[in-house]
Length: 98
Image (cartoon, rainbow, N blue to C red):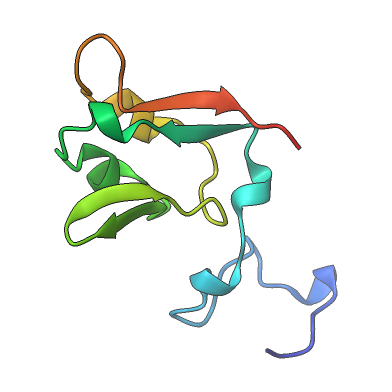
């Protein structure tokens, strides 16, 4: 990784100039709430994976297994889109404890 630039040297808007570098930036510390996964209620519709703007939903063999909290910003879109089973959804947002 290259030497850190001073803030006045950064591109306007904070653009990431090189492709494939988003993995290097841990953005999960921004969130105030986090998704909690309840696999017993999951119907594997993958709506959470499709709609997650941060690609933070972890899939293994085509099934949701959890979340990459290094990159999840806690927007809650996954929980909003989750149909879940019964009255309890498979994803619920909880306040982040730091």
